[in-house]
Length: 251
Image (cartoon, rainbow, N blue to C red; front, side, top):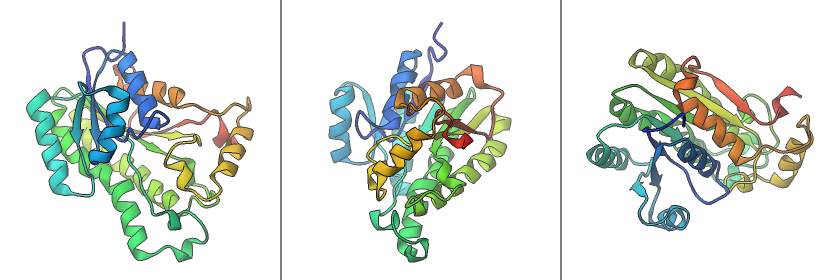
């Protein structure tokens, strides 16, 4: 039996077929769930339609605006009434904050990256949790640059550290409501987000070399783990960061 049969899951952050969020969406759908996609703006919607078609459930969600977030979840509630899970796969930092020295990070750049990459989890969870009337699961995406100094990851590593702290606090708050919150620390994968990091090809090559089997992790493998965390099979996992990086974090 499919482990997510009958579930309604919101998936954010699908930019193209190489997105980790797309790997998650495919795996979740394969396990029987109904996917509710979100997109940032009309330009991103066009990319999403190419992947999922015009008939898919799609809602505009700009996490930079509290008003837009409230409108998106009001529309989702009107359409579906309840949901069972949320995949948060949203992050952004200015390109100039992903190279050079961290002492050169600007105040505005710091605030922007934290707002979109970290605060957005709190913002969407505030509205998603009340729709999980029968309990549910929230899964966000992080990277080990949150706890190690990865060349040029810089501002995003700082933002991911904040994101992981939020996971622990959200998990504590929402667990009594039967809502689990966890993060997946995915290995380096060539996504649109990674290409913003200076010398990202070196990062990808080094990551693959450090896997015990010398084979890089895929969006499908991350997606399968995400589907598991969203499912009733993972009810014992709360407030954790699960590494899905083919063992890169071991070295």
